[in-house]
Length: 474
RNA sequence: GCGCCUCUAGCUCAAUGGCAGAGCAAUGGACUCUUAAUCCACAGGUUGGGGGUUCGAAUCCCCCGGGGCGCACCA
Image 1 (cartoon, rainbow, N blue to C red):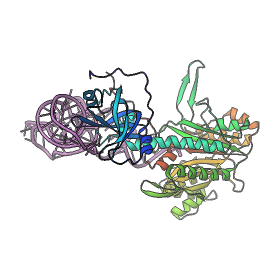
Image 2: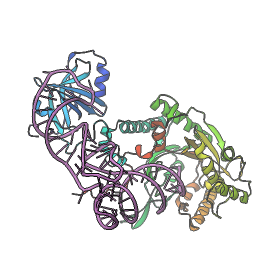
Image 3: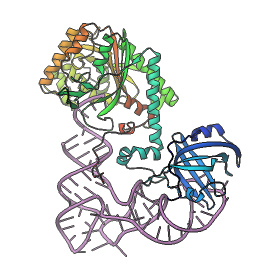
């Protein structure tokens, strides 16, 4: 294109597509307001009409029509030859066409960036998921749904911060590099620090650092933490994902259950207008309070057999065999109970349920149940068949914590590569005294999936993990 | 890691063993009220890569690669 101005170093729009639409609403047909505005964005549609050109300009808020008659628009020929996808800045008069469409009459314009590559089909957009994920910068322009989801995600995180801050929680940042991976049962990524000449692990959870801060006197802390787990990819798993973790001193698990119900209901109201939402074509009622049911109850509902920590291990193994749950000799009744629950009952839940009473054997950081021997005060919220959060009354006793760590370490030596290691500094922190504390971890990605009605985690992560692209070079 | 499906023009898709096509985008032209504008013209391809079967392969077979779904692992 020969007839274009040099791209300026800055530009000052004073209006947006959505702002204009709400400010001018229904003006009627053929109105010239005399109001001058300056807008900027990408030209997404263009319709030549001889001595008149219509365009559609998209910005981050929406789209607005451009109206460019030859007798008022400077460099009219060049305007008509703009490529779909070019960024332009336009100054002009707010008006409506004879058909009543709100438009800007183009009285001055400048190119802000030329696209060197053609945009996807203006009607069909992008269908290839690979291209959508790898070239999100294109997807966001042509897939309205993608833009909506990521705007909702941003709003959800912002609302969550404000809600927690209003309740006295303080946001903190803890290390991503961990000398000992801890706080969850998962395989870590390993990397190396050259100057210190030590291997470090990318965090699988911020839990142990956040509880150190409660020991340090920050009574209500939270972190919105990117965590990393060296595991498979699926529609529900990305190797890096975002967890909200919070710790509240003097609270127990029942306080945390209330907090989860209220937070999720608040977000649902703010983001969708109510606590009854539609997820993947099915109604989902997030209204508090949520049902509370033990693992044993949930299993019994599905298989008609009541099992628990008192069930003989051979009976548990037989049930696991019957329901095709793989098990190992090292599994105790508690682990078998959890495995059986996950296989038979978890996916069967739809409306929210707090699954409560997790065995000590599978909950190395949770406090023993005040009434039920062998159990902990731990719960998970299951929504739409998937785990949304994991929470418990925190284990306080350093001696008991040491036993749990050592038990985990033995499982690690026995070949479980997700077992925890003994974290001596964390034990030292507990020696100084952790007050009664309730803790929570919520998968933010999954919460966004629920409230945005999205079926795959890749659609709520801007740049999901993919195999590196080949042959991209010159 | 295993199984199934998929890959055709920049994008969205046809062609199922017999001449690789359409729409949009691009290019040239017509049009002063369009709404995915319309109309005329013109271009656009190593059918993901390699090998094989066949007179003939986008199509059938094998290997490799990308992606999707399911299983496993996990949140």
